[in-house]
Amino acid sequence: MADLPIETIFEILTRVPAKVVGRSKSVCKEWYALLSTRDFIRVHCSRSLVSSNQRVLLIDDLTCSVHPIIFQSYDYGPRSIVTLPFDHQNNDVSILSHLNGLLCVCLNHTNELLLWNPTTTAFKRLSTPDSLGIYKNNLNAIGLYADDADDYKVLHIKRRCSVYEGYVYSRELNFWRNIPFLTRQEYLSPNFYWSPGTFCGGTLYFTLCECWVGGTNVVICFDINTEQFKEISFPPVPSTGFVQGVLVNVKNELHMFATTGWFEITIDLWTLKDDYWIKVLSCPLIPPISLSLWGDITHYVTNGNWFVTTKLGKLFTIEMDTKPFEILYPVTWFRGYKGAVFVETVVSPSI
Image (cartoon, rainbow, N blue to C red; front, side, top):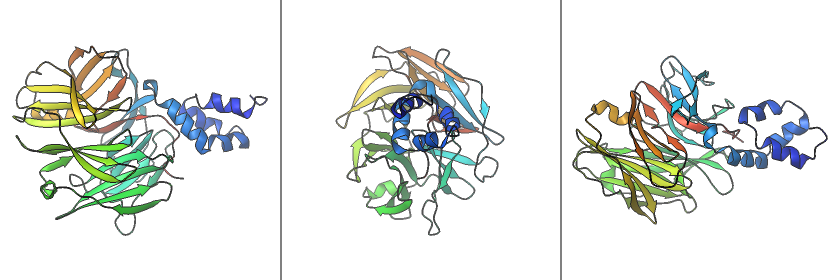
């Protein structure tokens, strides 16, 4: 390849796996410089966002492992053991958000936030001496996004005794700054639970659910360009049981798996159009399952089939009459495991 034009080398190497890019940097100085440019990383990332590059990261007390996804059998492939590159205590790490190969994680023994690329192993600490970048479980919310200038940012919503505070971290500036956050006073109650942020179409979306039967459920939206927040309604699901909404970006359209019930559980798939929810399909009632499995429910859709599973196995399959798409979205917290889905890229957590 030494005699090829640099443009051709660029085109070839933006199509190879991320780990191959890492090894290719050692070929020569010219390749190292090329593969480190923003243009290369941006184009390589855009071409890496395909189902075959998706991986599942699972963390328990003893191991951290990465698994490929076998869409033909709807299962995880053989695991690869990963060594966490940062200080931790018994793998006590929570995955809070993920985007384009980057994970925002919390070290639970110190509450520090990190950006981490598990493919390249690079990481960046986000905490500061004045206590910014410190995450409080069950009180805070995190969303990861990228702006039009390709600057990766972290939105950190902090709930204190009598006020919400919003902070944005910029990878480009390596700096936290405060932004206005206005919402209803009743949402300060610890009975409200925030989901991780889901980035879709220039907006970060969070579900905010009151954790009792018949409670209030809303969606909070953060426009990344205006940095303004607004509230939209939850899909019109029955309020006669517990409610859980799992958000997922499918081909730049926001979808929600809305779960509701008490003993028997109903799961509906909704899509957002102009701030209104449209039901895509409903599933049959799921027979009674233990309440402990509610937080385990994992949804994935591939080749026209919709699967709902837990760590104990598949609950049911339903055929979809919508256009096929491939996507896998496990919950970011597993009972006994902590994990997330990520795509293997060379996106760096720091500049």
